[in-house]
Length: 258
Image (cartoon, rainbow, N blue to C red; front, side):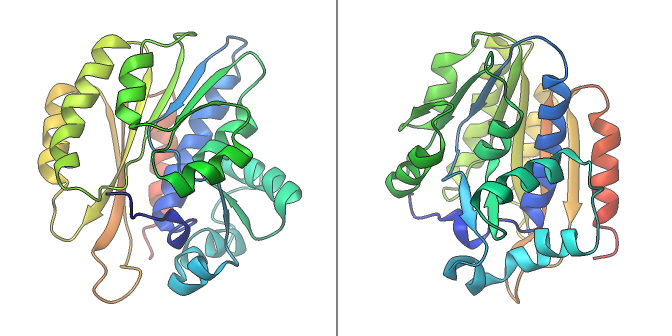
């Protein structure tokens, strides 16, 4: 259950969708002079090396963020590009931020952050860059359920599991329903993979039944290698910020020619 290592996949086409939408939401939320809370249930290590052996082995970043930057998929002033520029200025040209460091770029001193990561190696790496947040070495859903509704009540929760265990697909709609009841004003964003076996479909149907007003955004892309099961990714956002639907359509259009 703790075997997943995102370093092999950091910066891939799924990350591009997830991080572009996350950065846009954080940029929007922090534009208002009101404090917020940011939470993550599955934070990962926070910082990745796209020249490292894991990334080089799969080549997924070359087909994702590296290609996107070289072909100007995103404008220079896009929130993700702004965050990436600062992080690479600090950590080198091959650095790629996970969602915690993207959040750190936008969060202000008055904001509050909680990051959960259960994997011991990933948690140790996160502790090196996550000093801006409260770190939790525990199950991320347990952390979120304990904290929600957070203080400040305004804010965003990112749920980005590894989906190593098939039971997660069954459990996620129940977890999110409980969180949404506790924190009815929170932006709750779930990322999920689109696999060839369509195992995400029952989960998505349950989520849409429970939260019919949520935003659903999916992108499709070629498998990273022959036989690889992931052919797309999705974001399901409860209480989406104003304008996110337009941004999601712009991001989706980037994938139309792949």
